[in-house]
Image (cartoon, rainbow, N blue to C red; front, side):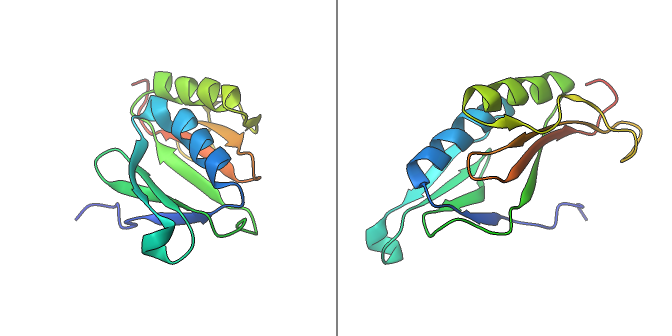
Length: 132
């Protein structure tokens, strides 16, 4: 059985347009894109966007800011992807919360970068390979 047991997560946001644009740009280097949009007419008053690689796993919903802030880690396939995420997220308006690098206190091959998104959430890209 796979250790991936979480199917998807939702992040409620105050500024839907800004946050979907940020996440699409920040996660683009990891192969994550907006795969689905659900309109206000379907949901009963708010928009939703689903981001993913093969299927949506991160849903952004226009229903007000999530508090307390969340930490969301997205798996990268290489150290280069971690760096590309970090640069893209900074360019998209994120704030540095930990430059790309090893985090051996988590495990020997943990390599990650951390960004604070425009609404204060800690977004991470992580690779678990030695030097992929």
